[in-house]
Image (tube, rainbow, N blue to C red; front, top):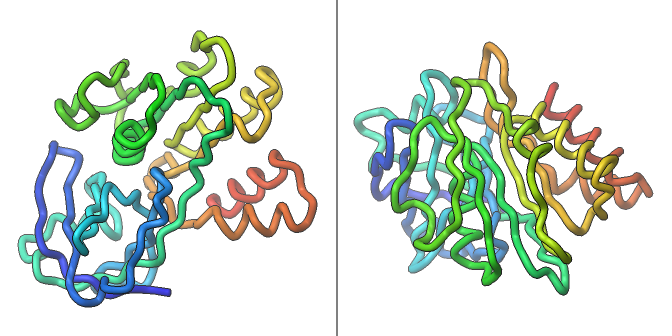
Length: 252
């Protein structure tokens, strides 16, 4: 199912982050999943391909998306046009994957700028001791909830990330918890292998997603992981095999 929404407003949060407020009668049937890392596909005018963005919030019929902007990209170029307010876009039904296990005593969130909207919402909605590691080009004061235990990490450069090295050096809390992470796909592949093979965590203890692909032509997430995950489980595949299928789809 898709919904047609009107751009009600646009706000620049930082040099690299824009907030879009969407609304109108076309969103009357839209309903949040309540999953704190939920995302929607967004199709902007003049384009037919969707790109996936975290739902920063949905209340009173207004959908808020925070978009990372760069020099090139289907959505990033459109979002910076002077006449974007008043234009109509298409959004898909929201989906999410954040699943806090029973008995979790702590939460660790790690991500780059593309993960900031999800990390902010998760921090607001999950009542657990939470630590955040954010790899960003500049700090975003006030974006994460007050009292968040945040470690700000310098971003190596546009289209680059070193989060795999950061995660490899983390000191983990005692007891059961949940590890959530999103960022550049190659980094996420390395981190999933680390969690599976070295830390030997069960799949219920973490969620690690590639939100974009690095390289000369930076690409935002254009593959919905939900169908791939469900098909893999139905086929009896292991978590590692399913994530390999997702990564392969991302590279196409």
